[in-house]
Structures are given as C-alpha cells and as structure tokens.
Image (cartoon, rainbow, N blue to C red; front, side, top):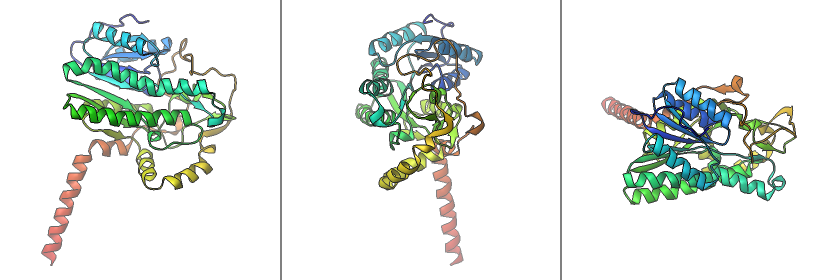
Length: 341
C-alpha cells in the first residue's frame, strides 16, 4: 500500500479523506469517488484502504491509498506531499478519523484518554494545518470537519470522545473567524452528525458489560457522506446539522442543559447498550487498526434499524428556499387579511 492506485485525475477535484478505511470516512470517500473525483484515503488499516480503493475506482473515481496514523503530524505532512505529487493540488480536505473508549470516566486510563484525544481532536488539528499550508498560498480550498451533536452535548460513557468533539467545535470557531478576517478564499465548515450505523461500536475499546450501540434513531453512513459532499460544495456556511435528533439536541442543550443532564443520567447508560454481553477479549482500534487484514466497509451491524435519508439534512441544504417560501406565504396571508378587512 502507499503506491499510486490509479492514474492521476484530470477533471474532478482532489479530495483527501482521513479515517477512510471504514465507517463514515469510507462512505465519504465512496461518495466523492462516484462524483469522479480523485480521492486520497488515509487510515491505518491496509485491508480497509484496499477496499476503499476498489469502491472508489468502481464508482468512477481515482484512488490513492496512504497508510498513516492521523495522530502523527509528520505522517500527515508526508501524506499531503504525496497526494499533491501524484494527484495534484488538494481542493477538499475532510477530517473524520476518530476513536473512543466506552466506559465511565473513572474507568478510562490516562494514556487511553490521551490517545483518544490525539486521534479525535489533534488529528483534526494536524490535518487542517497541512491542508492550510497548501491551500492558503493558492487562496482556495475547502476543509470539512465531521462533527457530532456530541460536540455540543456530552453524554455518559463517552467522556473522551465528547471532549474531543467539543474541542473540535471550539477550534473550528476560532479558525473560521481567522479565515474570515483574512478574507481568505479557503473555507472551513463543520457537519454535525446524529447516531450512525458504523463499525465503530464493535471496534472501539469498551469496558461495558453489554455490547455498545448508537442511541436511536440511527442513520446510514451514506446520509452522512451526502452531507459532507454537500458541505464541501458549499463550505461558506459555518455548519450543517444532519438528523432531527441532532437539531433537537443542540437546541435543547442551549436552552435547558440542566434538564438534559438529569435525563441522560437516567437513560444515557442503558440506552447505549444492547441486551447482549460484550466480549472483553475482542480486539479494538485504540492503538492498532482492526481492519489491517479484513475489510469491514462503511456499515455496522444496525442495518435493519437505520434510516437511509434525513429530512433535517434536506431542510438544512434548502434553508434559503424554505425561508423564502415561508416569507412569501406570510405576505400572501397578510394581504388576504387586509382584503378581508
């Protein structure tokens, strides 16, 4: 792996996707591939990367696989150089890699917490830096942070992951303001995700007695991928919300965070587990990739419970048209009232 997997792209954009061997990153890479883009996929799992290359190429895109650890700035710097050398100037950089430990905070070891933070937060920081170093001199490009409703609302059993997502949100706000102050042609946007059907719930380290699950409603990773691709096309907007639960969570946390604290204290621990015992000896991806030898794809084990579309995403993408239609309806209604009088 690491060799160029196809001829250089001549028509579409050059896109880099971190954490692209499985889950949301895999679905995002495949979505850009279907658009005919040249997609560089970065992750540790070589079998997963090989699967991503096959999927991108079968969809009509150009693929380049580069095994690397996103928590290592030097590896990302070398990867970005390789992308621009083999595919051309980077147009879009997508930060999506993450890991976690499912456990109460007191049951997470300090080195485990540090590792989650290095991948889930510093990976975004490092990826953004190497992307900006190449985009700013050209004064063009888009950086997409894949976030979560948990960037606004922490939940039990995921303190390390939630801490990383909160940090990304603050980092995103600061960076966006700096780019706006420069009147830069480089844009950064963030896509806040709901619960998604990905392999992570069987990959991340867990000290729970039962198998972990995303809190329903659950969406397929392709919903997330379409949102990321749309955000890359329209990066001027500061963020996008995917899923009605994401919107409800963010808004409720802004208004009644104390009530959410108590609600999650009662429901958040049981709601993140299914009635099946966890295998305490299964491998996890905290320090080593789980997809080194086998390709797991984008989906987890919740296909029968997952939604393939999001009305909230559609409304987010068409918010101007909706606002205009509502405004026009109000004008018509006001005119009718005046005529009636």
